[in-house]
Amino acid sequence: GGLLLAATAGVQAADKKITLGFAQVGAESEWRTANTQSIKQSAKEAGINLKFSDAQQKQENQIKAIRSYIAQKVDVIAFSPVVESGWETVLQEAKAAKIPVILTDRAVSVKDDSLYVTFIGSDFVEEGRRAGKWLLDNYKGQGDVNIVELQGTVGSAPAIDRKNGFEEVIKAQPRFKIIRSQTGDFTRAKGKEVMEAFLKAEGKKINVLYAHNDDMAIGAIQAIEEAGLKPGKDIIIISIDAVKGAFEAMIAGKLNVTVECNPQLGPQLMEAAKAVVAGKQLPKRIVTKEGVFPMEVAAKEFPNRKY
Ligand code: AHR
Image (cartoon, rainbow, N blue to C red):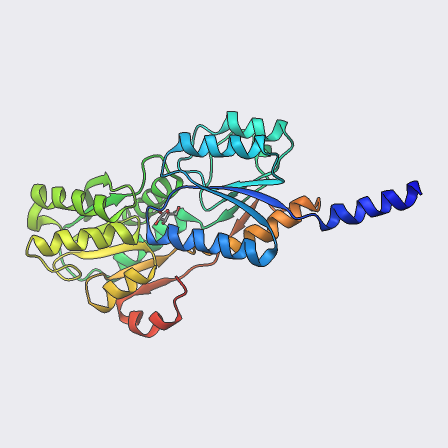
């Protein structure tokens, strides 16, 4: 009898639905909306019970959500950390509760990398380099090139890395200069507001806008038009994500190039969650594959875009 009971228990354990607690950054951009959709849909498809929370771009909310997942004894916790630092304590709490943590999209900076199982996401430094490389290869004008930069959320991995990657490449040609750099918090509204301030301060001196995401570029395009200038012509615009809104702007001739950052991390996350519950070893880093899309290919590529 005992043997049969044990065997039944084993079968039940294997069949048990995995509960995944996911602490999302917020809903700040088109990218983020696509990311959330991907996570929700792939959880459904994978038969995973998803608990989802939106931190409205605030670390304290994310920490609260993670603590509540620990209290609820979920099987796996995943999150996209709004900023890089300040995670040790809550990650130690998860570890003490023996709940594995998977990072998606954004990295954390912690000394002890046993605090998470794996990090699934893009190489943001490489995205910054691609943006810089496109500029050096395609900029037509002579003389000094004055660049304004709209940074992502202060302290976030994509803002730090995209800045570094871009600077690393453009410093090869000293005529390319970043004359102003400020955060637009990855939103359209903030991108517009900060671009207005840049235009007020620098006016026609601005040759190039480098925005850390498409939404800020789209907000800035509005500011540029309202200032009576032509986005994509008077000011060359480079951004990152490659969401549909960026393709529409490129087709309209207002955005020059977007560097892809893939938000569809859901399927890889569900696979990783299943693997970790099954006790499998995972690589510490899972990188997603991405491209670069200049204005000239926008109309042809548009129908193929999934986000
Ligand atoms: O972490 C990825 C970044 O976050 C995206 O590039 C940006 O659009 C989002 O808000």
